[in-house]
Image 1: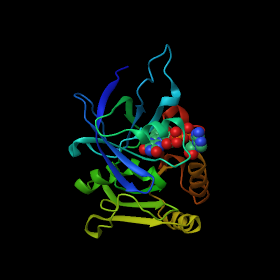
Image 2: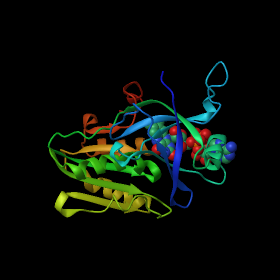
Image 3: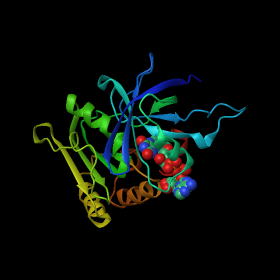
Image 4: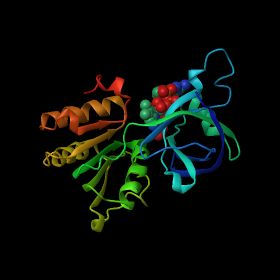
Length: 232
Ligand SMILES: Cc1cc2nc3c(=O)[nH]c(=O)nc-3n(C[C@H](O)[C@H](O)[C@H](O)COP(=O)(O)OP(=O)(O)OC[C@H]3O[C@@H](n4cnc5c(N)ncnc54)[C@H](O)[C@@H]3O)c2cc1C
């Protein structure tokens, strides 16, 4: 397993408690839209076994052409040891990245794509939207629906409706509005539904989609193929 040690080059405050850590791109480090990686804090591999409390899965919220690896996360006042360490890191500090892959690349199958997310789950979709806006080929339209109860919506510079590109960005603050809108989206029975959020959020969305006649092969989750059977 290759471990890439790299430095933080910028910390961007996206909203209260939500930061994007921009990391230098190590030589040979490659990723595509929808990628996730393991982000580890110093000392994670100091013992015989990796210290799991210093490692988390994180999505990469940027694309390679932007020149940095972006990691977007929420750090609340009451937080885990991991988030507490991350929250104290400064520009120039080192972190490690390893085991990078993507389960949620854009499927260009001449179908509409619906991106359903909760909170910072939107970070996973930012590169998909950038990729789509650069090239809309073989996707009939793209629609993002994000629920953020704080109403401090993220990445509004990218998630901005663009009628000429058949892209709709929608943010809601209330669960009731969110699930009503999911129901509306299922009217198109051809669509592909990508979902990112907590496991409970995934299950609730999947239940609605299946009830409305969407089939499991139209649902895309940011899960390793082996984990998928627990959901669909
Ligand atoms: C493929 C994939 C991609 C992901 N991408 C992202 C991403 O881009 N951004 C992102 O933020 N997350 C992402 N996650 C989730 C991430 O891996 C973490 O599980 C998540 O960020 C919570 O980590 P944590 O250390 O805050 O909480 P955990 O330690 O996992 O604990 C869960 C909850 O318990 C609470 N908690 C834990 N310890 C304490 C404590 N000592 N005191 C009080 N409360 C506590 C926290 O509020 C936390 O919400 C992704 C996960 C996967 C599988």
